[in-house]
Amino acid sequence: MKLIVAIVHDDDTRDITDKLSKAGFSVTKLSSSGGFLKLGNTTLICGVDDDKVQEVVKIIEEEGKSRTQLMPVSSGLFKAIQPLSEITVGGATIFVLNVEDFIKL
Image (cartoon, rainbow, N blue to C red; front, side):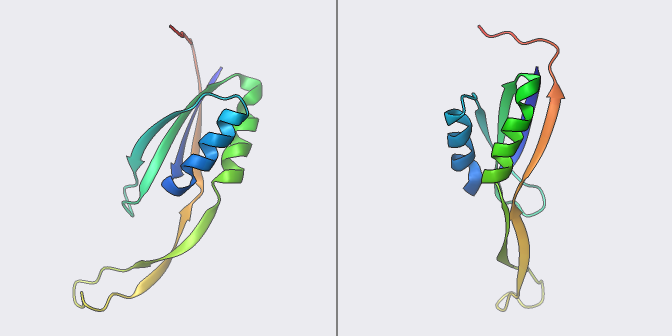
């Protein structure tokens, strides 16, 4: 058994969780935020059999595409005129962990 921990962009959470649920996977959703851009993220936790890992990863990959968006760049000198910078958001960071024991009560 494996534990999949996926950190995804808030905007992708509903599509990912809906598709995982429709495919028969249970998923737990935790709100989180990124350290660098301070954007809203969601951490998804899903326990699956070893042979189902790639199916879950594929769903997350399909529904959690990265994209670019314009963000204001904070400048200490000219706060009234903030230039915009294009950054990449979305995508996912996925951890697949071995589970020694699984107990459902």
